[in-house]
Length: 178
Image (cartoon, rainbow, N blue to C red; front, side, top):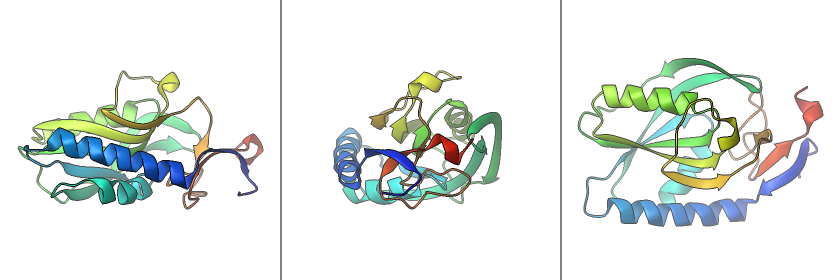
């Protein structure tokens, strides 16, 4: 375990197992329908996307957006789109892939943007859901794990670009970000 991690919340094995379950659920939900375009929000969702797509038995495509609202440990509520989609989404179902739904501001803004660009529907799959921090009412359609109000890192999630490559999700020691 990394010296800066207070405790491990979800091991790599637990994450893989949950991705298998989510993949099976997504496969069943879209069976016989148009497969969704998976839109992953950079950078944090990349490990989750990479694991999740192994377990979705549909002819899917994926694309990326780079959207930010964080500085350090705080969500500022100022959504900035740094990279937009390369794929047309007009008339397509979208499955937005996120590492963590926290305040809900980012997901709410991106969902609205994708609807305005012509998506037929926008659903959300997230590795982690932190409902205690909601500032905007959003409910992910698929949730890996719910977490308490702790500062989590690993499996794509970071603190100032560090800890993303940890193969698990853990709680960062407070002295590392105070």
